[in-house]
Length: 167
Image (tube, rainbow, N blue to C red):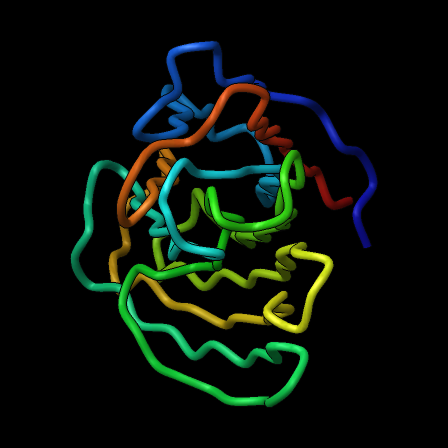
């Protein structure tokens, strides 16, 4: 059970937007990492796929995504895709929310991660999803980057990275 949560870093996207949200120089002093955020992109779609990279790597990822769209449920497999985010065609001024949990991020084994995310559109096109993923790399995670598949994150998109100590 988690004993302590410590904010490592936070990012708030400014007026110009951002192509990615990056956390670097992550210390190896915690047991697990938790990344939470509220994001929106400027794409012309209702929703937009997001990707995750560890240590600037976009390779050796595998994932299973289970989701519901308001009218149907489905699953898919992918590589670095972690969630859907609200796009510019979604209800104005709404942001999707996500939480990514990365246990044993500094260990010497492959890194698993999980994600819980939801978009908001005040319509049947909203998406709620769960993801289980694996980064097949034994390196300690020292940086995490979340990127929009297309477009950029809009102003006021936020993300917070927490270190968790289990004891």
